[in-house]
Length: 131
Image 1 (cartoon, rainbow, N blue to C red):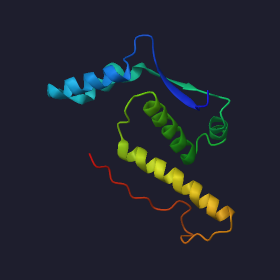
Image 2 (spheres, one colour):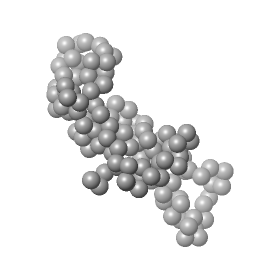
Image 3 (cartoon, rainbow, N blue to C red):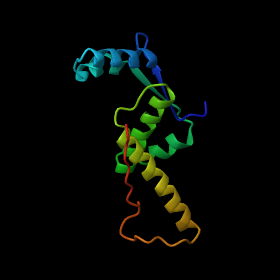
């Protein structure tokens, strides 16, 4: 496969559509959402493609903050591509924006471009999630 990670259901897992339906039903009944994760959140399995370049690169970053951010982002991308939802959409957007900004910054520095803020390697990113 071309993907570095994928989310699959365990043998008795809940499909993404069923999970959305159950969350909506629980919310419509006015029930607390905190117990939902305990009942259904543990049924997802993260499959890792060890031959993918991103995973090989991540191996060298184990234990670092950058490695942790990449791992969380990979998990969230797997959720989205598997049809599930990401609970922290604001955090997801910030991580994607930081990753994109670091690639743009690295690309401009590699080509001889100047970086205005020498104190911080990653530009400040502001996001706003509108529901």
